Length: 101
Image (cartoon, rainbow, N blue to C red):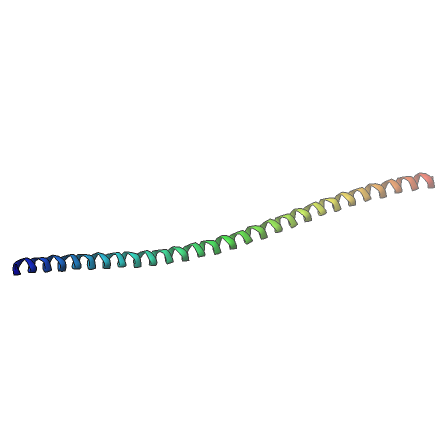
């Protein structure tokens, strides 16, 4: 029966060894996953930062373009007013020359 005991011990040792191996492999995989997760987390944070900064660039550009179009509109209005004033001045000149005749 000593042989049976030895066999039982061998089986137990083998099972223990396999469990330990499996455990270590699982631990290694978990560590890999942790590293990957943290890398992904950093990438997501960088992307969010980039997106946010791009968004503020876009908003700034929109604001500038609105200001530019406002300036253009004001310039056009000013030109129209000046043209109108010239018309009025020449009409006044025409009227005053008629009066003085």
